[in-house]
Amino acid sequence: MRLADVSEPATGAYVALETLIGLRFPAGQLQLTRRNRALSALAGPNKANFRGRGIDFEEVRSYQAGDDIRTIDWRVTARTGAAHTKVFREERERPVLVVVDQRCSQFFGSQYCFKSVLAAHLGALLAWSALGNGDRVGGLVFNDSRHREVRPRRSRNTVLTILSQIEAFNQRLPLASGDDRSLAGILQTLRRIARPGTSIYLVSDFYGAEDPAVRENLFRLAQHSEITALSCADPLETALPPAGRYAITDGQRRSELATADRHLRQNYRQEQEARMEALGTDLQRLGIPLLRASTAESPFLLLQRYFGGQSR
Image 1 (cartoon, rainbow, N blue to C red):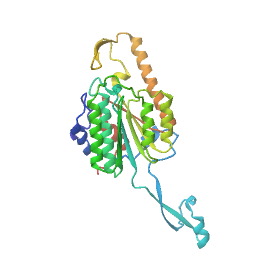
Image 2: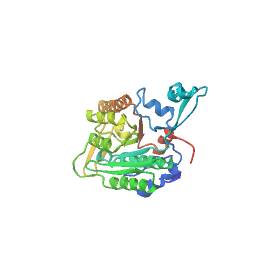
Image 3: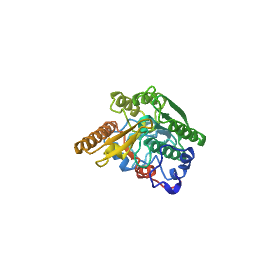
Image 4: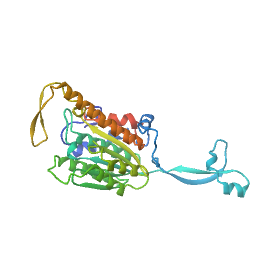
């Protein structure tokens, strides 16, 4: 994807490392720390215990009109006889973890690109944006049988390592039958490596998210981290195509999809809508915003909608 193409959907069944590196330039227009009203609304009324960046104590100064009375330093006030207040400064950096799903369920697409490619583009844009903001960036890339962790560092080489892992996992698709590791298992790993205060961007199709263990792990993570979920979907998953017969393949076998039955199309659409609604409801209860990404839309424009900022 060249800079001039960021307004268009990603393309292809596989992703190239040079394409992910090239996303560094449009990512400069994103500010992940800028959670606008639209994103905040997606998180619902329930907020996580930790809200992104922390605060550090800086100094004590004389109380001024308009200061929050909750920050008054009563010991200094009692000792000096004059009201004093504590001043805090916002923590300047935070660890950011970009988690990218490259399981076989992501190896699917109908028009522009596969979901695995969409996830790769989103992960690259998020990683470059975080680095440009001065944050320490790490990653977790996984498929059905293995994962690779990249420790957060404020380094261009670290981002390149993350992108290399995304490409490597992407190029292995489709996988032969393996351990079939669940989403709950990956979240368990994420709980182990995510330190308190980490900002987590979870890019997945959330296949298997109905497992109660998934919600439990997300609940534990949300207690000390700020999580943003990005779901990858394809239009064909939302609604079957018009009545007809269509050739489909999983890369190994070929079959035919018949969609002439109106009730079949209607039931399919309702089931998929119910699945996504249930996912959104579960995440909202945990205070986790859900961004819905489609293979038929630009990944950059989706992120710009919620994290748009001035060019750096």
